[in-house]
Image (cartoon, rainbow over all chains, first blue to last red):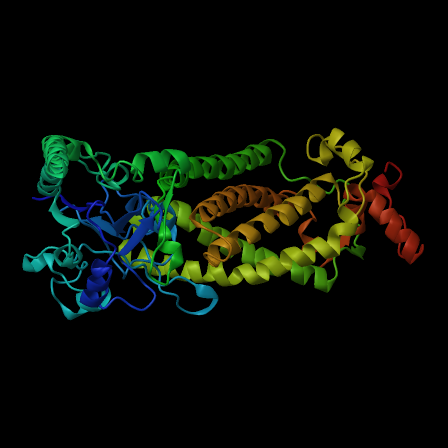
Length: 198
Length: 333
């Protein structure tokens, strides 16, 4: 089985936000929720970098560890998913997440948190693969169709890579070798406690 | 002359071009366009978080990475259960040992049959409103910290999630009457709860709990004043930190919400431990004590044993008719 990961090659990202748009459209993500976002550091200054970020599907995921109702589970592909039927919207996963991935729809009074929503690695949820229920709650299940996450597939500069960790790390290494530089695999150390030697 | 000059220029130009061409590939390989760019590890070391600009409306998502969630995870999964477990189980153990050795603090002079008003209807209403909210808040709060380990394996995912969902609603909504109760308690009992010399003497003499002494006390003795300030300060802290969590991003960021959760949970578990002690002494721990918050009227002999100065004060105010001295230990006080 593959160990699915995301890798954003920050030297290629041009902040076009196609990944963000693709994700919102593919999963019909509700208004106000962004499963993926592009963050630009040092915007307008020398050394500016843009990084596309979503749930990194961490090894030993902090969200899963702190969840009071234990609604998270990890698939055979090492994708971290959760059950919206079990989620109580307490906000704990959000406090623990290093990447700000969990999002909560504002429901009811006092801005109280609804069921958490986050990137599913286009792998749906606990419901039957490709079912209507699954789509309504979690969006499309591309992985079950043998496809990779749409954000990476859609990336105009092939900056965002998705797939088996070893394969995308190899692609990134080759790029770094060829062009002679690379700013590293952003978030990998935090998410997977390893980084790509280049 | 002019042609010679042109030749020299050409030759120089060609030479320079040759030089450039031969050097250029080597230097191009050394030019790293990202050399001055931001580095992840460097940013994390400097700030322990990476933040930038986003073009989507949700500006808060500009925080790219903030690994201190790990420390919070450690607190929530290891530190807090230890603090809570030791405080609550420790308090229960302490009470059990105390109850087994000392037993109920008896009314030594027996009941006089005559009562005196200790808490009026409004005071009791505020107390029980706050108390009811507190118990529900405590159970639903402890459920978040300990439920996954203790209750979930017993009742299963669906039932536990359903219960936790309702517990969360209760926790959020009952915070309002609870906070109101804390404010009212603060205002209506502040007068009797300013620490004084009497409390030091009271504490020195074991507060009537250790040994069988009956140190004099005003309307509230040292122990009750302690409970009062635990409720006011602890209640204030849990309310403030709780609302910070309930209204995410209203003047808070992720870090301050982690801090709020830490303050909220530590204060809350200590608060629960203190209230277990309070409930004990108000019920099975002391004969005649429950009546103060039950009917609102306590036996005059109870008042004499536990709040002698207050009783004297009340008698002086209401006149001798009400303060008919009772036999037994009246003189001793």
